[in-house]
Length: 253
Image 1 (tube, rainbow, N blue to C red):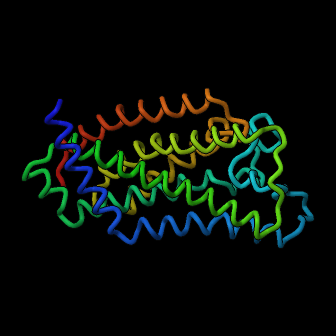
Image 2: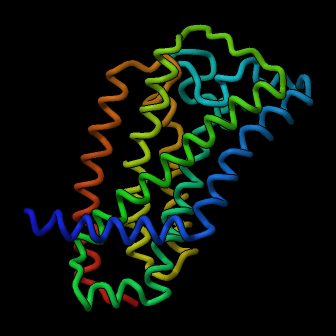
Image 3: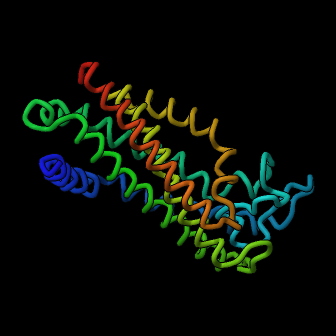
């Protein structure tokens, strides 16, 4: 166990260094910050909609919807589609590009040949990509606050409170672990074929998209946080084992 932890610590140090020396993570964080600002400012400039489509009436709608509210469930209005849930698609790009670069550059092949076990690689990659995804979620949250202030939207709460917003944010961060596990599995299947891993990841992400508001509503509770935390841990372990098996059974090119 101690040997595994020492190897994982070494791998994490290398992976964190590689991620934060890549322009990609900073580009993704910048996009995450700018996205809600553009969404809130542009929709507020539109003023209204002749076809009656829902517009943002407060800042928190850019984060999520209220469970049981008019824009919850299977609703496909603007406030349900153009919120923080879009970040999971961007996280797919981060995971797939970051992982594909390992195989494209030959880093993964050299790593496994010299010392590392594939299980160490999967654990390390999962934790590092989760950290990158969490940073993107937090960047989006900051951008939503800035965008709301610029657009002059109210920060009033209706049907939820500050505790629900905090629980919602934590639930969305923990849910990143679920999606990272899925995206990483596709990334090790596709290896250096970035386009394939992104296509598969976004396809599954779109399938799961309407489940996200139910798991991370604005009126979230401690139960939502626990469920997403447990789900993230279960998916990380289960799909991590699948990713490890794929790496053991397939070639590295």
